[in-house]
Length: 367
Ligand SMILES: Nc1ncnc2c1ncn2[C@@H]1O[C@H](COP(=O)(O)OP(=O)(O)OP(=O)(O)O)[C@@H](O)[C@H]1O
Ligand SMILES: [Mg+2]
Image (tube, rainbow, N blue to C red; front, side, top):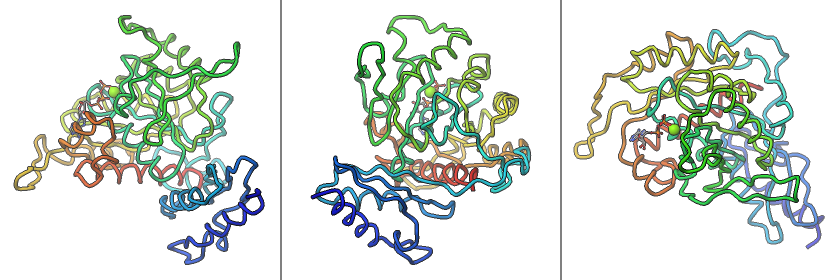
């Protein structure tokens, strides 16, 4: 089929999908624009996604288009609504949609990435990587193009959480080589841990980390991404600070545990982000109680409400709590993030809701 006919088929497929709020189909409602199909059968179009629109719409559109015989792929450019005039309000009082400054276009390195979100914490072992992996997987599930950068040098944790153990390939001609991201469950993955030899001690200093990260971002063939999630190394030292400053973050998701809330670590971490003028998108309380597998009663092992109180105190949004859940470990063993392998589990549901809030917040940043 020639590209013109294919384009007509794409329009027809999109016209069969109705927007739940407006009741109009995606074409008539102007939700999709600039539909084109190239000689290779790749369909490209823009999808105007308002903050109140369900993200599943994009996924639905993608599936419908990709199901057309002759279409080899769909490149959907999700357009969030036009920015507010800049300068309106600050982030100090938390996130009020419409009152946050518009994000600046990403400089040089990551100009093909619409949004960059870091997942961070005051201390280690609180579930940062778990939250980052599930956030990325949940975003991929909505049909958006997502990358996950494991900025932890202690080993390629993130690829393993996605069931990938192979090393990345180097592509491109000599002198212009690029590192090809690994891909699993619709997420493009890369880990700083690949840069270290197995037996090399991970004693990289702050400036070195930032140098490596820059090189990394320059050399990874991410392609176009709607969202990039960065799994940060734990702590609030110089290394973390230079990392935050070398990427132009839209914001950070802070992970804490009920026990950790009372320590100064989370507060310090939040202050660190404020110092480098990075928005804290909100706090996730992880390992917040557990559900008895027998009687399904929820047991708050370390007390309840700490994360929420902390969020109020620090004037940042509270994104939700994730219970201790065997599904998380099983997901790790299987190499499939919980939102995909056990989306109905306690942790799976909580993580899905948190991802939705993060996406809403990102959308509100430009709307
Ligand atoms: N809600 C949960 N239920 C059950 N197990 C969990 C939960 N959250 C995290 N874990 C487990 O706790 C361990 C630590 O989690 P994770 O590696 O994500 O933490 P981290 O903050 O990234 O640690 P590090 O600081 O070492 O990078 C993992 O084995 C993970 O599977
Ligand atoms: Mg980690």
